[in-house]
Image (tube, rainbow, N blue to C red; front, side):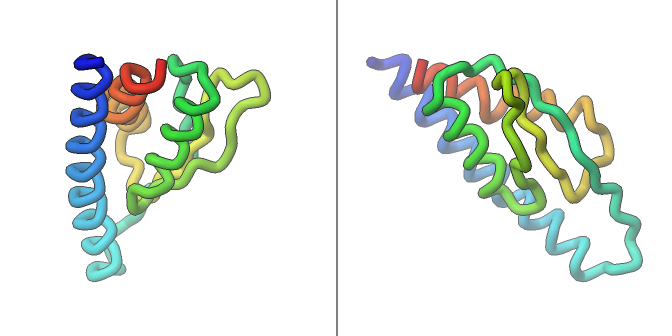
Length: 109
């Protein structure tokens, strides 16, 4: 029970932080239209396996400005995510897994 509560608080804190930072990034892109934008698609491998966990992760990603979950792999092994400011794909995948997926997994599984 305590572990799930802690995981929920960690997820909430990181989700709010990610939203603030992403909002600043997207605002910067809007206010400086000549700044080059490197957007792209990434595959985020899934460690979370439950329907609730995958859904919560997909929605969390989509609610963060500049990212949107495009699809879930048919075998549920990864999420396909579009990222507006994609400078380092591997670092972005690692950040999603560390800051969003790990606490969600602790919360729902």
